[in-house]
Amino acid sequence: MNIHQRKLKIPTPKKLPWSEEKLPYYFIGDGAYPLREYLIKPMRGQRLTTQESNYNYRLSRARCVVENSFGRISKKWEVLQKTIQQKPENVEKVIKGICILHNILIDKNDKTLMNDVKYVNEQEVQEDKQQRYDSQHFQHQRLTQKGAQSRSRLMEWFEKYPLHNVTYHRR
Image 1 (cartoon, rainbow, N blue to C red):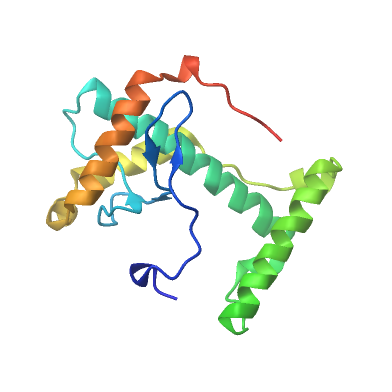
Image 2 (image 1 turned 90 degrees about the horizontal axis):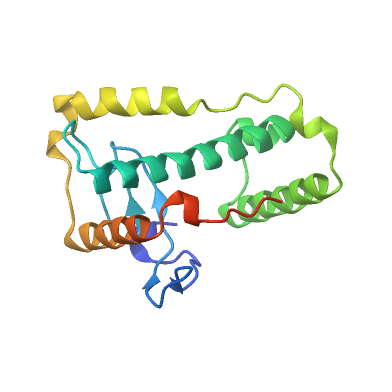
């Protein structure tokens, strides 16, 4: 299934908290990905504005949460540590089933979820990103107009609602 064909069942845009503005759901990529309407990535460069730095920081936090979650779930469910040899529609069911079971274990406070889990260090992520930004290799990156608009809208929302005003919900 190709995301460019828009065949994924991605939810419709939703209002951001404390706002009437609707934004779509996004995939979060690193600097190696092209910016798209549905794929956001960090701003690059060393001389970023405060708004751009804030955006990068918030994006980095979100990526760390996703990477930590995937680390936890793939450690617990070994089938995710290699290519799943099934038809795509069956892979989708396997992954959904694992997510449901994983959430049940979290709700039941299953201690085995915490064994031998490697968490992503946010500082290492930032250092890795900076090395990528400094590389000339990524200068050819494409920046689509819709992707740039999406990123700008998120940056504006991040600036309007700084982290100290945001309440995060934990399971």
